[in-house]
Amino acid sequence: MNTPAHSNGPLSYRLEAPMRWVAVDAGFDAAAIDYWSEANLRVLTQMSQFEERGVAIEQPTPQDLEIQRLHAKLDLLLTAIGELAPRFLDRPAKRALQLSWCSLKWPADAQTPPLGSSGLVEVHLHPVVLQPLRWPARLLSVDGGITEAELLPAGEAAQQALERHVFQQHRRAIAAARRG
Image 1 (tube, rainbow, N blue to C red):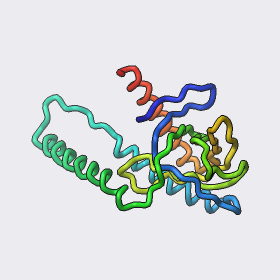
Image 2 (spheres, rainbow, N blue to C red; image 1 turned 90 degrees about the horizontal axis):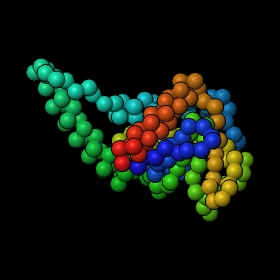
Image 3 (tube, rainbow, N blue to C red; image 1 turned 30 degrees about the vertical axis):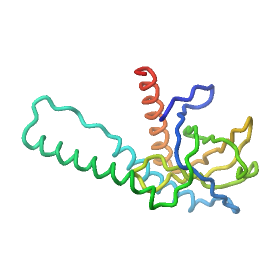
Image 4 (cartoon, rainbow, N blue to C red; image 1 turned 120 degrees about the vertical axis):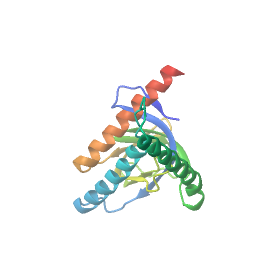
């Protein structure tokens, strides 16, 4: 379940998702940043397409009804893939996360890398999107049992897509909290 994160920091939200830190010894060059930016843009675009909601039509035409029927079948197929895929993929364990447009926080454990380490944070944000978000990061702090990694600047389109994703999830979490 996503929940809004209220703090004095940047807009963020909380979630439970499969996540791992992949250490990168040499840091990141411009080509690597470009590669991950493009891949992350694809992941975030796919997620927004899956989460897109259709508008209810008051008096649907036969074509509208056919599209709704096909959409329902696709939803069923995507739900099945989302249930089955994790059984066949090597996904890391779920962790409690807090994601913002510029950082990721998670509980510290025995595998927490040393401060200043560079790596990729891999987060599976959506069960149907098989590729994780892989964002170059640098470990900033471990404070009170919470690890914080700075998400390194990426390509403009990927950065905007991440900001849009965080904003949408934050707003959805606030709306869900008000309903509940």
